[in-house]
Length: 319
Image (cartoon, rainbow, N blue to C red; front, top):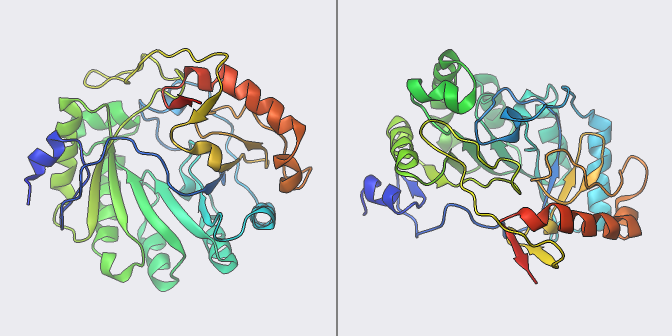
């Protein structure tokens, strides 16, 4: 069994119950997902996120009937074997949606699984008790907890230390009940891979190591096709490598083009890095999903996205 410190030095995922094989800070998804923007609000302004550096959209949440409509459209094109995992994480905090629990139940009733990505601030006692009393089809829970240090908290998340302690005690309630929940939980400590990141990771580990079945993972950053180029704090900075793939045919090294991305109005686009959803090829509010996927407009927008956006992305691959 390797020590916590040696694992952090190697930039790999660890657990307080077992060590895992070495992994990089970033790895591609291996299955197709549909990412649906259930709401547009995030209560954090993490330094490594566009929300801290660009104008954020007005607060909205998707109504339940339109949400059902999108799920039906997905199922009209993809079988459960081809696509069955739904995520709500689109530069938002999904649990701020006032109909979050209702949407969970709709997905479960329709046979979908939910990939629960969150900053953890909405993991209240009420929500935890709901998940225990009414088990949902949750693929896993991944919580973005980039620090638990008073001095770093505000600079990292843009929120108050009071919120940090409130969240810590709510997470303790959550983690104490892992044996009554039907999904795995990972705490992700996002950062630049530096010594400062490793130190932060170890401090978060110390906060939560007493809980059974909780994994902790050092998770890397990407500048999202230079949208976050040059951003930093006094301890960490956004990794950047200049690339210029303009005019070349590209694929996504993270497999994002295999996924579906739906904005709050049902607009469909190509990639989670497209913060402003500029490269949409139509909305399921106007046309069936199958028609949109097979449309000339999709091919046109894909060519634009490839040339304008992917050409600056370090996760792109020349084909």
